[in-house]
Amino acid sequence: MKVFSGWRRLVFGLPLIFLLTHLFSVMELNKNSKLGEPHKQPNKKFDHLVLGPAAGQGLSNRLQCQGTKALNRTHSSNSRSGADGSITFVTVFAIYNSSLNVGDEKSSSTVFGDASYNKVGRSMALLNVFINFIQVTMPQSKVIILTDPVSDLPVRRNRVSLYPIQGEYSRDKLMLQRIRSYITFLESKLQELSWKPRNITHYIFTDSDIAVVDDLEQIFHDHPNFHLALTFRNNKAQPLNSGFIAVRGTPDAILRAKLFLQEVLKVYSSKYRNASRMLGDQLALAWVVKSKPHFDVSRFAKGLAFSEDIDGSSILFLPCALYNWTPPEGAGQFHGMPLDVKVVHFKGSRKRLMLESWNFYSSSLDISDMLCLILGSGRTKYDF
Ligand SMILES: *[C@@H]1O[C@H](CO)[C@@H](O)[C@H](O)[C@H]1NC(C)=O
Ligand SMILES: *[C@@H]1O[C@H](CO)[C@@H](O)[C@H](O)[C@H]1NC(C)=O
Ligand SMILES: *[C@@H]1O[C@H](CO)[C@@H](O)[C@H](O)[C@H]1NC(C)=O
Ligand SMILES: *[C@@H]1O[C@H](CO)[C@@H](O)[C@H](O)[C@H]1NC(C)=O
Image (cartoon, rainbow, N blue to C red; front, side, top):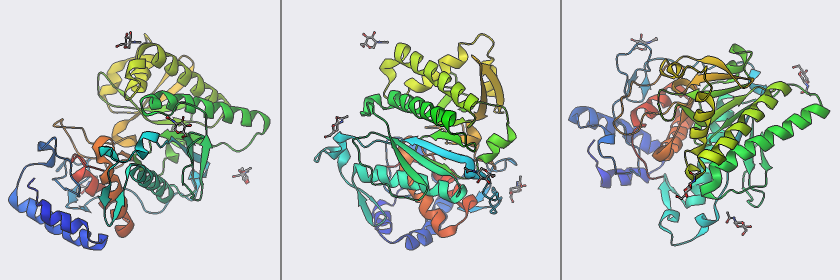
C-alpha cells in the first residue's frame, strides 16, 4: 500500500468525524491503485489507520466486507437479558517505573486523534478501551484488575475494581508474576466461597489488549462440565495462548484451575525461567498439556472445541479463531475472520488499531462494521 503520509498526518490530526469520512476516500484510492498489502513493508510502523483488503473474500463462513461495511450480520444486537451478570473479567495490569523516565525514546509521546500520550498514558488508554468493550457487549459483568500495591492506578469506572497483590511486576518478570497473581486470586475466591456461599461467578482471565465483541456467557452454558478453558491454535511450538483462560465459578473448578496453574508455574520456573519475559507461560502451558501421554496433539490442527482431562482437571480447549482471534503476523496464510468471532486480540504492534476500533464503534455502533475495519487493518504494524 502506498503511503500518503503527509496528507494522512494532516487528516489524523482532525476530529474523528473527519477521519471517518476521509477513510472511505482512502479506501477508494487503494482499490483503484491495486497496490500491495500493508504487511509487505515489515519494518514500517504507522501512526495512522491503514486499511488493506479484507482476507477471506468469497469464503462462505468468513466475514465479507465492502470497505468497512459488513455484508454479514455477525452478532445479534439484542443482548441476552443480563445473563452475563455472573461473569467477572480478571486482568493483570502494572505501570513500570522505567516508563516514567523522561528522555527515553520509548517514553516519547504518541499522538492519537487530537490527544498526545506518553507511555503510561498509552497503557491507560488501552486499558480503558478494554473495559469499554466489555461494558458494551457484557454490560452486567464486572472487571477486576490485579495490580501492584505500590502503583496507584487512576481507574475509576463503574463495575471495575482494583485488587492489589504483592509481587514482582517488573517487565521481565511480569508473565511469571501474572500466573502467581492468578493463583493468589483463585485462592482468595476459594476461601471466600468456603465461609460465605454465594451465587456462582465465573472468571475469565485475559490480557488487557483484547476486545470482547460478543457475550461469552455461552461458553459456560454450552459446555457445562469444564473446570477451566484455554485457547488453542494450529502452531507446533506454541499451540496454547495464555491470553484467555476461563474458570468456572464452582469451588471444585476454582480449586482445579488453581492446581493446574500451580503446575504450569512449577514448569515455568524450572524449565522456561529464561523465557520469562514473553513466552515462558505459553511454553509452560503447552508442556504441561502435551506431556500427558494420552494427549492427542493432532486436535490442535482441527479448529474445533474439545475437552480433555489433565491431572484431574477437566480442560476445555477453545479455538483461538473464535475466542482469541488475531491475524497471523508477517506473510503467514490468512483466511479471514469467522462470522461468530467472540474475542479479538490486538497482539504486538496492533495497539493503535484497538483504539481506532473503539472510536469507530462509538460512532457507528455496529460491531460487524468494526470487525471489517479490524479485518482490513489487522496486519498493519502501528506505532502506538
Ligand atoms: C455473507 O454475505 C455474503 C455477501 O452478501 C453472502 O454471499 C454470504 O452468503 C453471507 N454468509 C452467510 C453465512 O450468511
Ligand atoms: C517502583 O517504584 C516504587 C516506589 O518508588 C518502588 O517501591 C518499587 O520497588 C519500584 N518497582 C520496580 C519494579 O522497580
Ligand atoms: C442469587 O441469584 C438469585 C436468582 O438469580 C437472586 O435472586 C439473588 O439475589 C442472588 N443472590 C445474590 C447474593 O446475589
Ligand atoms: C538460563 O540462562 C543461563 C545463562 O544463559 C544459564 O546458565 C541457565 O542454565 C539457564 N537456565 C535455564 C533454566 O535454562
